[in-house]
Amino acid sequence: MKKLLLLLTVVVITGNSIFGQSTITKKSKMSKKLETATFSNGCFWCTEAIFQRLKGVESVKSGYTGGHIKNPSYADVTTGTTGHAEAIEIKFNPKIISFQEILDVFFSTHDPTTLNRQGYDVGTQYRSAIFYHSEKQKETAIKFISELTKAQVFEDKIVTQVVPFITFYVAENYHQNYYNNNKNQGYCRAVINPKLEKFIKKYKDKLKAN
Image (cartoon, rainbow, N blue to C red; front, side, top):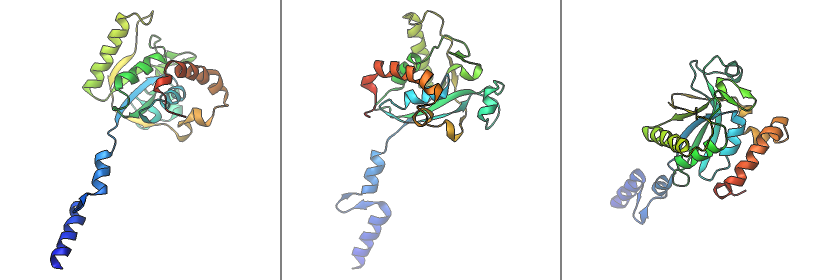
């Protein structure tokens, strides 16, 4: 009896089973290893709506990065004096979608040749930038821009910044999932809808199932 109790104690403490590996251990091995990409490429309402629809993207948060003050608000950032850009933080599964594929969508869904501007949105907070999280991301981004330049994909020079990631501040709640919650809002219909239509047409094979 004592030996049986001792065996059961070992099973509980170590998570091992006399019949095989425990369910807890299996779950930990099956857990997804996500990577992070941080971009600024115009209004985050637009960019969030686009990247949310890609297979392999687990989450997209709107926020602010690249500035010099802590915990900025939307009102602070819109002044253009904090140094922050409207940005998105993307959590993705690299086994489903690569950082390079995400870069392809990034460059295809905004104009990387306009300095501190995207359409009618003007200011440093709307600059085109890649905030890399590793040397590998940095190298991939620089190489991608070089290839776009050589192929003359854009008539004008690419001005996208490739800079190290430091801090990402999540934006106010009403900015999160903005398009999905406000599809009938004027900006969504006039600006985001046309962008989404072009994106969906080009990347239909990379979209999540409805």
